[in-house]
Structure formats: C-alpha cells, structure tokens
Image (cartoon, one colour):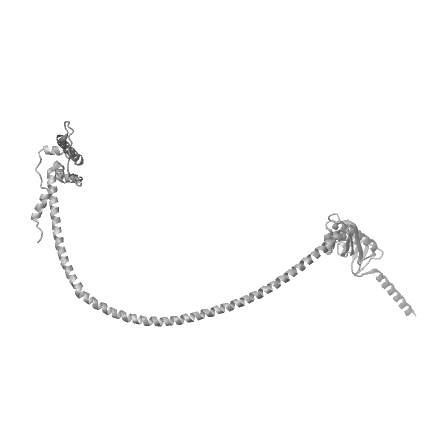
Length: 437
C-alpha cells in the first residue's frame, strides 16, 4: 500500500513538472511571431529594448518575469480606392484596386511592427495600411496622365508599390501584392479616349486592309510581269539561237569560200611564180644585151669625157695661177706707188666708170637735135656749144663726189710713171702661157 501511495505521489510530481515545463516552453509556428517582454535586451543596431521576438522555433520564458504576446503573419487583404483624384492634366479619376499586406518578419522591420502593432487587431492594421496606400495612390496619380494610368496598369501598380514601399516598411509591414482593378472618370475623358482609339484602330484596320489589297494587286501585277518577262526571255533566247545558227551557217559558208579562194590563189600564185621566173630570165638576157650595146660604149665615152675634163681643169688651174700672179704683181706696183695708188687705181677704172654712166642713156635713141635760135645773144648753135664745157665740168664734179678724185687736178699734175695695167698683164700672161693645143 505504501508503494502504491509513493507511486501516485511520484506520478503527480512528474505531472506537475511536465505541466510546469510545458507552460514555460514557447513554441512559435511559422505564421506567428512570439514577443517575449519583461527583460531588457540589446538589438543588433545598438538599441536597448524590453522585449525579444521569435520567428519560428522554440524558447523558454522566465516565470513571473516575462510575458508572451503573439502577432499574426497572415496576409491582410485591403481594398484600395480613391475618387476624384486629379491626374496629370487635371483630369479627375476614380481608381479601385486590391492590396495584400502583412506584418513584416524581416530583421529590422520586425521591431517596427512589434512597437506599432503588438496586440492590435488586424482590422486596425488593415485600416492604417489602407489609408497609407490611398495617400500614395493620390500622389502617384498626380504624376501620370489618364492614358498612362489606363493603358499600362501593371506599370501604374509597380510605380505605386515603389512609392508606398518606404511608408509601408516604416510601419513594419510588407506589401505583397497590389493590383489596379478599375479606372474610371466622371467627365467621360476615358470614354472619349476610347472612342478616339477605337476610331484610330478602325482607321488603321481600313488602311491595313487597303494596303493588303494594294499589296495583293501589286503581287498579282508582279506575277503577270514575271510571266511576261519569262515569255519575252524565252522568245529572246529563241531569236538568239536562230541568230547563232545563221551566224554559224555564215561562218561555214565563209570557211568554204575561203578554202575555195585559197585554192584559186594557190593556182594563181604558182602561175605568177612561173611567169616571174620566165621574166627574170628575160631580164637577164636584156641586161646582157644592154651591157654589150649601151653600157660598154657609154663607159668608153665616159672615160674619154673624164680625160677631156681633166685637161680643161688643168688649163683652168693654170689660168687661175696666172691671174693670181698678175694680181700679186699689181699689188706690188700699187704698194710701190705709195699715196698716189688710189688716184692711179681710179684713173685706170675711169674708162669703165664712164662706160657705166654712158650705159644709163644707151637705150635712148636720138634721131636728131633741133636747135631753135631765138635771136638773142647766146642762143642757137653758139649757145648749145657754150653749154658743153659746163656739162663736162659737172660730169667731173660728179666723178669727184663719187670717187674723191679731182680729174682736172690729176691732169694738171705731172703723172707718175704708169704701172702695168691689168689688161697688159693679161696680155703678157697669155703670151707666157699659151693655151694647150
């Protein structure tokens, strides 16, 4: 009996211990955060707080000193909507959307959520998040046009999430999802834009249809053109082949004609060669005949004339030598005459000069001279005869002006011994050098 009682007491003690330990062990599920408050604790950022938060796992609390509170990490759906929110361009819009938020369990943000929403119902958390998101929604709408909001709602929602992210995190919340469900306006702006876009789409459709039709017609025309070009190319190839055939026929005919002409030319050439050989024989015979009849006599006559020419040349050479000797002697006599040599030379040339003067009137034929006697003194024959001395004086003065020799002075002066004249020297040379017989 005593053993039974001891067993019962032991079992009770064990049960009490188990119950006590179970009440002190805190097991935190994944969708909840356990906040144990009562003792001071230093956070990683250096702050000192009077709590500690556990996300999943287990821990022990100190009896009587620590208290356990719980925060839910479940998603909180929120309907977000604004009315008459002015967009860019002062167009009022009505925007309806839905968002999912939850208490953040990220290190650093969890402390914000514990300090703000510990023991706060989820309805109040949803209301606070709703007001924050609607305020950010109005701010984002003011930067976008109605077309941008309505056309690209995903971009609009992403811009809103980026704008509200800092405010939500400051509260210790996380914005999981934000979707824009509806965008309307009370002034009919979006309807007008829709009608304009519908008209634009219809216009583009008609334009596209017309372009497709034009392209189809163009393709059909190109097909016909290619077919016609193919036919033309085929005809052209046929004509080219026919031309090539005619050219080949002409070439063959030309080759045949050329062969025939070559044969004819070869025969003519043989005939001409034979005639040339015969003509060469004839030329040789004629050359020999001319050599005997013409060339030999001409050669003999040429030799005779050459001998005669040599004799004439010898005579001319001798005469030239005699003339040189005469002029040498004449020069010596002029040198011997001294200062009077010039006057002697002019006097010897005087007959030739007078002949030249007389020759200027040689062509004048004077049949008779008629002298008219006017009855006065100095007229008639006595007058004419009286003019002759003056003419002679004038002629002497002209000779003196031309040659520098005063004829009358030379005649008055005693003339020196006359040297032998060229004519006398020529006569002497003829006597000393008789011509060859």
